[in-house]
Image 1 (cartoon, rainbow, N blue to C red):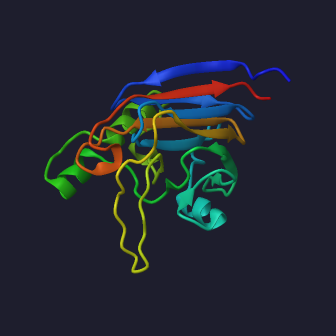
Image 2 (cartoon, rainbow, N blue to C red; image 1 turned 135 degrees about the vertical axis):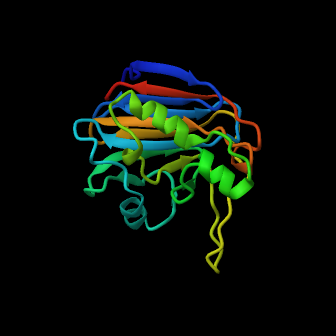
Image 3 (tube, rainbow, N blue to C red; image 1 turned 180 degrees about the horizontal axis):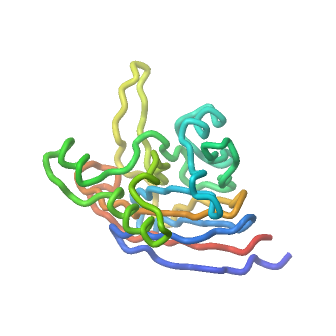
Length: 202
């Protein structure tokens, strides 16, 4: 069987955003090039972006707050957006949301630019904006939850070259923020580049 054709391969610089279309059946691969780098992600129905990633539906279907191979990311209409078909990391976060200037000021007293600002920049390219940001999934990031309900952002633990592979279950708009956070340990306090690859449908 022939290897799938690469449609796109692009490096997202440290702290930057990215967005693009991934069509039904195509494969999206995120590669943490240097390790310990979180990637915040939003997914939308390309043709009706009012339908978008829905964390509660995703968690209820998965039965966990930490996603890995075999799990599906669902929309607010309970339709599959993308499926996780391969994963070197295991346990991608669904509850931490995105950092932002306001949240960094609230939590750390420093109004550093965050993923929300990257999302807004990328969404603007597609006629979307603030009202279209919802709680996102965080790839290569973990928020452990204790038996007492306590939660904290874990230190970035992915190894260099770690990948997560997603298959589009409908035509989707993907919006990514290569997280610029330096005030908590999700990026090991050192944001680095990641790679995004899109392969044609098999």
